[in-house]
Image (cartoon, rainbow, N blue to C red; front, side, top):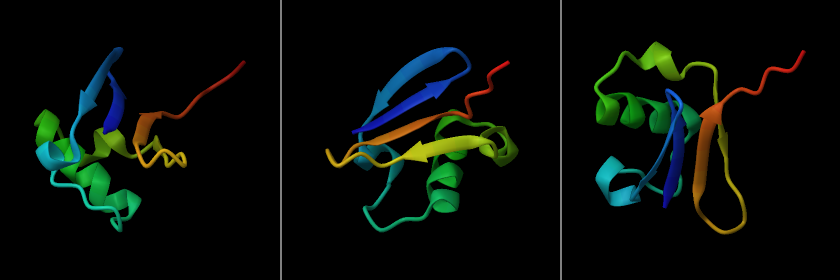
Length: 66
């Protein structure tokens, strides 16, 4: 499962829906997300991709504090 936080909303998307494979790098995953949400790739440039041991992906905006 791919968990995405985008524009203030949370989405759970299957790897199949995004055509994401286990060995893909961050740039490839962000490109698939941009296509899925029909937005410019640069919208995901500062996003973080976490890969917990569960095998899921968590994709979120970079946290800014202060």
